[in-house]
Each structure stands twice: as C-alpha cells, then as structure tokens.
Amino acid sequence: MFDVVIVGGGLTGLAVAAGIGAAGGRALVVEQEPVRRLVEPGFDGRVTAVALGSKRQLDRYGVWPLVGEAQPILNIVVGEKGSPAKVRYDHKDVGTEPFGWIVENRLLRKALLARLDELPEVEILGASRIEELDRAPERVTVKIRGGRTETTKLLLVTEGRYSQTRAQLGIDVQDWNYRQRAFVCTLAHEKPHEGLAVERFFPDGPFAMLPMTGNRSSIVWALEERLAEEVGRLDDGMFLAEVAERFGDALGQLELVGSRFAYPLRMVMAERATDRRVALVGDALRGIHPIAGQGWNLALRDVEAVVDLVSERLRAGLDPGDAATLEAYASRRRFDGLSMVAVTDGINRLFGNDIFPIKLARETGLAVVERIRPLKRLFMRHAMGTLMGN
Image 1 (spheres, rainbow, N blue to C red):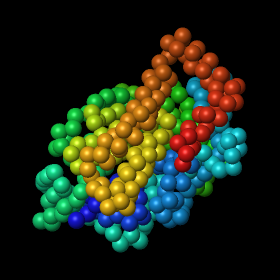
Image 2: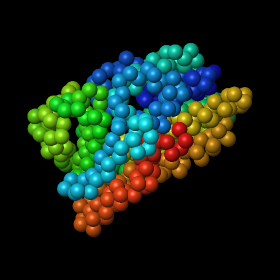
Image 3: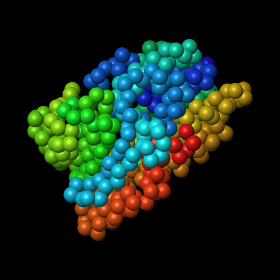
Image 4: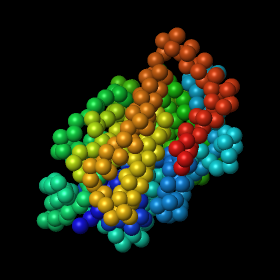
C-alpha cells in the first residue's frame, strides 16, 4: 500500500512526491504523458518564477541543487503605459538574496524527476491513467490502465485546473473565463538584462519580460481574445516588432528563440479542497491569473501543507488520509488561496480599465507604494514568499 497516490505528474505533482519521499513516505505518481515527454524543449515553452520561500522549500526536498540553470531576479519594475508612476523593487532593500529565480519549466521537471530517481519509496508511472476509483472508509483503491491495481490512504489530485479526476469525484468549480490568451516565448537580446523583471499594464492586458540565463528573457503577454487572434497570425518579424513597441529598446535588438505558445486564461476555484480520502492540490484546487507570477508559489504552499501533515501523521503511526488530516489541510489553505484569487483577479480588472478616475487611482496607488518604504518592503517580502516564515 502507498501512503499517497498522486494523480498528475506536472510540477506540482512531482513536488508533492519529492516532499513525501524526502520525508520517508511511499508515493506513486500517475501521469498521462510519457515521462520523457515532460522534459522535451517543445513541451510547453513556459518558465516559472520561483520565489525565495519556494526555493528554500525545494532545498528542503533535495530538488533545488539539481535545477542547474536559474536566473536570479534582482530588481522588479511595475508600471503602466504612458504613465510616469512606477514602482521599483530592489532586492538589496530587504536583504542579500534575490526576490526569486526564473527557471524553464522543463528544467524544473528534469530536476524533480532526477530527485524522484534518488528516492526509493517513490514511483512514477508515465503514459498511464487511473481508470477506476473505489473509496472505502479505510483506503482508496485505484485501477490503472494496463490492469495494475494499487491501494492508498490518501489520493492527491494535482492534474491542474481542468482535472478530470476532480470532475469524476463530483467536486464542482467556479470557472471564470478572462477572455484573454497569454503568449509565451523566449527572446534573445543584445544587451544584458541584469536580473531585471518588468511588468507593464495595458488596457488590453499585462505584458511581462522575465530575465532568463544569458542574454535571454521570457515574455508573458496577455491579450483580449480578439487581439490575440490577430497577434497569433503575425509572422515572427511582425510579432517581434509588436513586442518591441510594448517593451522599448532597453535590451537592444530582439530575436525569437524557439516557438511561440498561446494559452487561454481562466480562473478556476473548486468548491472544496477535500473529499473522503482525497485532497486537491495546486491548480486542481484553484488556478489563478498569471498576472503576479505567483501561481506555482501558491501551489507549493499547498504542497508544503500536505507534506507537513502527511509526514506528521506517518511519524506518529497515524492515518495520513483520515478526516482530521483533510480538515486541517483545508483549513490551512483556505485564506491564502482565497486571498490570491482575489488579488490576482482584482489586479487584472483594475489595470484592464482605462476609465479616467480608475486610471488616476492606479497612478496614485503606484506613487504611494513607491514612496512609502515600509509598505514597499511589505510588498517585496510578499513577492519573495517569506511572509509565511519560509
């Protein structure tokens, strides 16, 4: 019997497995994609902002030393088109460590998989799926494609915001379509970025340039669906011209590296975090707008809660999937999750409105944050993920 079975082998599912395995628990990961596909360069093209608190967590799980290429975020500038009001964050104002690191998703998955290879009590099944679930009072039995059957005390659902297992369990969601698509790609540029991340807001959606290793940056450019369709039809040269128009010439000439990807943006929030012997983790519990770059950091706080609770129960010889454990998990993750949903949704709506009084309020707010140092440091510590003691 496994202590946990994890449905979904994305970043969140692999992180849960690493945490449980590092604590000595037995974990099985069931992933529908072949494992080798998860680390191919063309799999999704995205990068992840790993906050300082999240990096410390991955260190505890033995994952971070295996990451390799990671670009420190040393400074952040936030502003909007046509406004002199900006907020400039410098990591030196709150310590010596970076705000976080930008890492390619495939490199994170590669590091997580390498760590799982070191943990004898963790198994990952690629190109697999759970075909049947049977939940009894004392355990969950899963029938896996190919005829394999396993039992577990706790089923963790980490499939993402469109989880089929969550739907199969009858857990409803609130689903909000932002009617936006996010373009994601990697750019090479003439001049060094010096660890600067830039987020600029436009009436039709936010635009971010995130520093990567070398003279490279990743862009995350969210647009209303109508404009996204037009931009999606542009050739690479015209696409780069539009990017340069929004970002400016601070990094010199830009060159596209690899493919362009486009992702629809939706907010999804499950009506509850748990069910009998089941817990939702990460985007399966709630998927937020990428506007603040905090999606996986939020998911990792779910992971930490699960790992801590399961580890405590196993050390005490208790059931890691009983009602008390699940209630504690739901309670721990409720406020943080709801807060981040509200904040990211609110920022997207606030900066996506060009009505003059709202625009004036935005500019005033940015100016206030820039000038009041204690408030500014509070925002910086939140971005670093260190307010929770990580």
